[in-house]
Length: 269
Image 1 (spheres, rainbow, N blue to C red):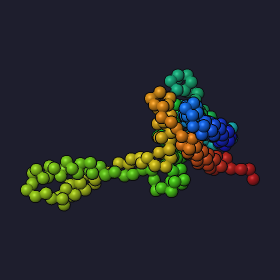
Image 2 (image 1 turned 120 degrees about the horizontal axis):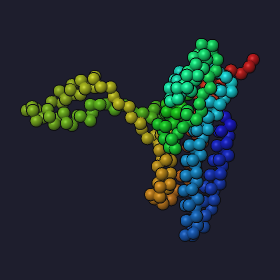
Image 3 (image 1 turned 30 degrees about the vertical axis):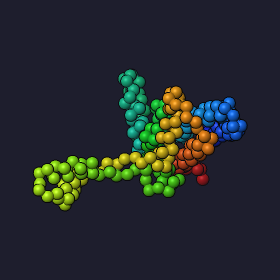
Image 4 (image 1 turned 90 degrees about the vertical axis):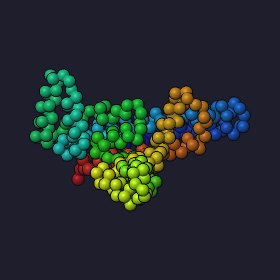
């Protein structure tokens, strides 16, 4: 995708900042440390902006390709079709909604294309969190994008873990049983917990590993710097790690989006 190439050029700019910061820090002077730290902090904020812009641009470019190729609306991923419906229902002006509805019905009936709104689909809300990114890509048919990329690039089973609903009640139940019984009965407690688990399925929680940790840490430091809440230094090596993580996420997302395009827009024979 073209936006991935553009991101590569942008990341090169931040690499130059990291190299410049390293040179300043090697001077071992107070001014050098101040300059070096300022450069890495600025580079990290810039990196976060490039990252958010990339997510937005990748979705925009994807939708533009589908619109240009005039893909049959019936071939779109179900989630993308639902997004088109949601956009239609969000039109408040009835005079505009009626012809838009007629166009959608005609596209479905005849198997023709329907212009998708890239702005609505690519909106990050100014904060490219893991949940925001996964929500955006789920709309175009890519579920759990960051989870899948973390599994591939970090060799983990999942960024999620299942937590028993009953475990947090174990201590309280144990105390109640002890107070109302002469003997502490761990078997009875386990039986009660199993009854609870049979009623409520385990909750799924994020683990701060893989790209989940990478994104959360990038945003955490960006927020501290942007809001003036701290001046902790960002070592050039740490900035380079953030660059590598953003590059890895971008390449993975590019591959996922490109695969959908290849399925929907087969090359001419």
